[in-house]
Structure formats: C-alpha cells, structure tokens
Image (cartoon, rainbow, N blue to C red; front, side):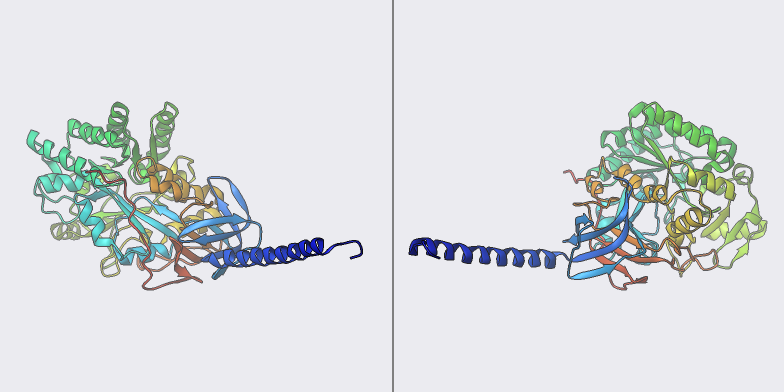
Length: 489
C-alpha cells in the first residue's frame, strides 16, 4: 500500500467489511425467501388454459396462494416432485348435488378442488354454508334455488325435489311475491347463482320464469337451468329459457345439455352458438356418461315419460339392487321414491357434447347414500382425461383442461370475484392445483361400484393444503372454503 495514507486504508477496510456483510445479508435473505415458500412443485408440465402456458416449470406456493411460476430453481419447506406429471389448475365442478364429506372426498380423488350445487340449490343460504364450514375437502358453493324456494313457499313435502304441490301448481300472486322475495334474499346473502328447472316444476308459468330471470339479472347472477323436456321438444324447452335471458339480460347456463337434448344435442349446440354470436351470455355443460340419474317420484316420470324421454322400463336401473325395472317394479318404487339411473343417451351424443368448444364439463354428481350413487360422482374428470383425451383423442389435453378449470371459473367470476383467482396457474392465483399422470389417469367408478376412486390423480392441493398425496386421499384433510358472492345487508 505504498503511497496510501492511513485514512485511505481505513476507508478501504470499512468498505471491504461492509460489502462482505451485505453479501452475507443477501445470502441470508435468499435462504429465508426460499424457506418461506410452503410448497414447491418441481419440474412438472405446467398447463394453464388462460395464458396457454404448456412447459416444464416450478411452482412456488405461500400462504395458500401461488407465489411464483418459474423455470428457475426454487426451494420450500415441502417439495413435490412432478417430473413426468401434468400440473394444472384444480378442476371446478358447477353441478354437484352431493354436498357432503363423502362426496367431497370422492371428488378430490378425481382432481376436483371446488364443487358447486347450482341447479337445485338451496332456499336457506346462510344455513347451507354454515353446515359445511370446516368439514369439506374441497371448496364449496350454492345457488339460491327456484325449485327449493318454490317448495318452501308451497309447503311441498319433498326432501330434495318436489313431490307435492310445487310440481304442478300455478303460483298465486301472493306466492309469486314470496318466491321473488326469497330469491332476492338468497342473492343478498351471497348465493353464487340462481338454480332453475321447469322439468321438476312444470307448473311454473312463463311469468314466473320471467320474474326469476329478472331478479337474477338485477344481481348479475347466472341462471343454471334444467330444460323442461327432452328429445323432440328440446328446442321449445331451450327457447323457454333463451327468451327470458334475452329480455332481462340475465346470464344463462344450460345444465347437462346432452342429457336433455339427446339426439338433438348438435342442433341445440348450434342454436347456442348462434345466440352467443349475437351477444347473449349463454353457456352449457355436459357429463361423459350415457346414463343420468334422478328421483323416480319426480315430475320427470309424469305420464307419457316413455315417449318424452325415448326410453322404457328396461332402460331404468335401480342402483340399490342392480335390477332393470319393469312396469310393476317401476310403480312400486315410484310410491316410495328413490334414485333411479336412466339410460337416455348414446355414446355418439355424449361425444358430440364433450368435443364441442361450447361445453364445460360438470358431473351432475348425486349424493352418496349407503355408498350408492351415480359413477359420475367419483369419476367424471378422470374419465374425460383418460377416455376422451388419451384413448379416443377426441379433444386435446389443453382443451379438456380449459373445460374443467378456466371456463367454469369465468362463468361465475362476474358475480363472485373470488373465482377470478381460481382455474388458473399464475402468480396470485389460489393454490388449488391438481397434479396427474396423463399416461394412466382413468376413472374406476361403475354403476355397480359407484364409489371407486379414480387412478392417476397424484396430488391435489386445496388452498395450498394437500388433500391427495402420492395418489392417496389424506383422510381428515378439510381445507375447503366457502365460495360466496359478496353478502349485502
């Protein structure tokens, strides 16, 4: 240090010490930042239908949210090795009647992270949400259901669907006023949508239908409608809800189009495409099974059902015994009520609906009773991925994921803002994530064994908490949260 005085030497020494300390601090902060990530999902094929991302990435999760999606190395407290697996947004089911823990577990094992009861809905929104708080493996939400409200106002004795006065009675002026008030109250209490079905309440008049849509439009709520009739009356039934949607501006979602449209499904899809091209907010859905399921005492089986549905007794399956029905057994079971499986579709009809760019995928799952239900309650999403994407190549993997994640989220997000952070893999989105093996994912549930869980769903996170780990359901894991529209006084 020739020529360098003491003061200069001191400055250099302080500088060296400062830089060394800063380097140490930066390294410490880097280590802390890595440790602050709760979960990292490494080297998976990340597929995000919103951005179109389809690449090997690492996903970092903190406090129930996606913190980062990056090609750079990251570390966290828990590591999930996703090499060779697909990392996608968790699947969103807009049509799941089985809103109990058993159904939630079966759906989680099928890759579902949010399940909604939007067709039949509830007449008591606060109570419905309170009953599920802290008990759900997946997120959950409900509509205020016109069916359920009508049953309440008319004192119908049905347990789930109408079985008495609410089926055929035309609402009086006072009853219509009460129905409207209770629908509006349900929406104020945060109901996600409005459920509607003249198939189960054929006494609903055109004016009552219009009032339901008017209230929905006022609260920006989509109307999730089950069409009145099947087969050759299906166009008239579609027009019955398209008209009120056009008049009021209420968003319309037609449930399980292939189930009610049957062989006319392609024509109904064409009509929906045409009205959408003219600016009407209409969406629809399908499930990948040739059979449906409903209550045998419901209005679906009113006189003339064989002609209307295009089926007969032998096309009905009683799941408790596995028997195909006869005229005698049909009459006997109809007196006691219960759930019956109805074979109304063909595989051609199902495929036409599944591949249409207009359709979302939704299960129409039925609540388990003594282990009995429809296989769609446990297998809908793995069935799409395994049979329609991998085996039949009927649609691409990205398109299937779009139908199961982004599109359902977008259907609800205008009224329910929390849905803007679901159905996506991006920074800031909720950590509702499904990791699956595209080479072997498949449904296992059958009509004889409807509770069998799907295979190939390796990891499922709900709000950043594991509910499926290494292909196994995590018993007792209940991180599901209520999904609710803003509550108003």
